[in-house]
Length: 384
Image 1 (cartoon, rainbow, N blue to C red):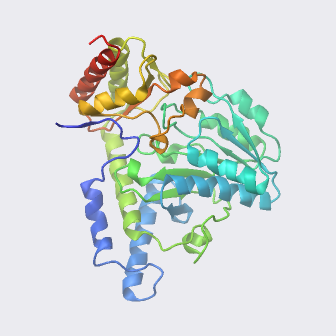
Image 2: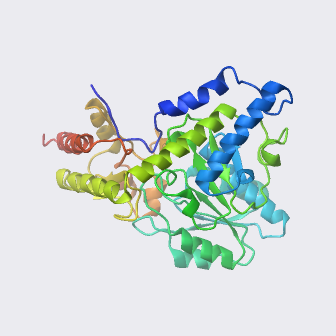
Image 3: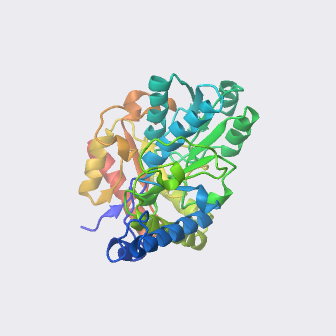
């Protein structure tokens, strides 16, 4: 059976060109970039080149790229590190996040509340997952240390009004972080509004798991959360993953090539056609997230009356790979906090199903997936 992978928001396959770029740094050029001998110096040069290429795609300076182990670490460093540095500079112990942030942001904010006495305000979203801008402005105060709002939600695909977020935060002097893990590759990172920190993750872009970056476009001070030898300009200790950095740089370049080769309007039209097919083929299915302001290759639904897990299993048996939402929450029985925050009741939230794909996914594959979903839903309802 040929599998149709429609869970690419969870992870993507490592691209061959990325592996080829990484290979020398996993074998002969295996030096530690902190070493001063020839092998170490070559590793340091390779790391510097990768950092510069990442910076070029992101529209920042190489010194503003902090290499990490992935999105979770980058989110932790941004939320905890920026907040502690801001507090040290005299800001209040107050952080504002949206109600539908990734768990890495929510858990980091909760850590600050438990161990550093930080007050955390969660700003609500509407039924389509869009941040309430008025509620954000009301939540901010002159001493607020940090605002963290995703560029695009991983579960429902909604794009957030980051320009309004930045304007509101700057009005009170707060730092701004955005988790752009799902956003990167689809939109130019260099065109993000002037935030202080941007999270990206390699394995969403065709690089291996275990490498990411925190971009610091304004060079805002950040307190490290991993301590040791002071690598990454004292912001993230630990021997640098040279091969991973090279892979991330190549993956970003390839994603940029793909973005330029596949007009956004075409991808959105393909997405909208898939959404329409699902809504017609599965009676009672409802789209989650904003119908237009959403990621281009992302479609998510609730299907009242059918458990999300049985539906995923039925699709899996038919060769269609999908998910119930965030891969980080897989295997849990609790309803999605994102959908609850959007106003869904717990029973509805437990029926969530998400389809995410890439530019190489064919229309035929999407048509097949929509048909298999309709047949699976009918069968589970006892109508097939």
